[in-house]
Image: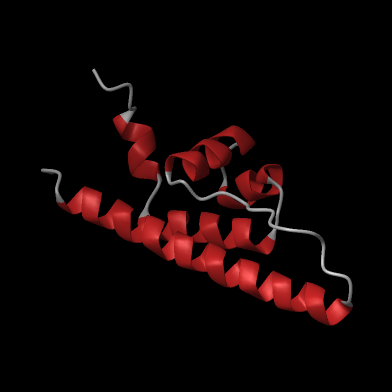
Length: 99
């Protein structure tokens, strides 16, 4: 037994995973993400951890508004790239399973 709940895993479609990642990239709390997705904070957080999609804090805080905006754009680009990879892994893993 692997510990996975098949009914719950099928709830996480590629579209929901993509939306989860986008909401994380926007910086929303997991409570708000859970509400928007129609699930719990813990479910959203656990899925993000399983997909290895995490928020990263790097280096000192930018000093100017322009620097903060550049840092935010770079952070969001990196997060969206991670989300795309996570959604791709999810789709590929589902292709390998028999119906």
